[in-house]
Length: 137
Image (cartoon, rainbow, N blue to C red; front, side):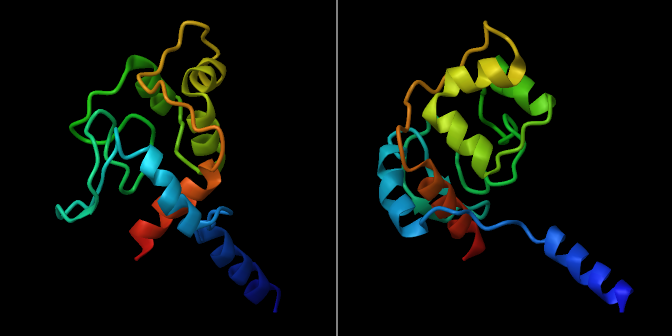
């Protein structure tokens, strides 16, 4: 019986955690993001037509920072990814609230910079939940 409990617990840990935000609110909140970011599947299906100043955010949940193929990231985001930054809810929300400040803290580098200057004052959890939901569909 103990093996069964251990196996069940291991399965629960293997399942990605669902975001705590509200995906419906996040869909509306993403309107602030789409001036710079699009959401497009690898097959080329456009979910949200948006700008190309920022990387495509399809599949950003669980992605290593600075690794979307074909996008030219700043050095600090690349360094954060090389240091192990993977976009989970906590890191995504903190980054969107203050991109430059987040990178300075994460990298312990006062010279760290971010190309993203917009700060999402609230609703980051909702936007994260929305981004997670479009991949799960």
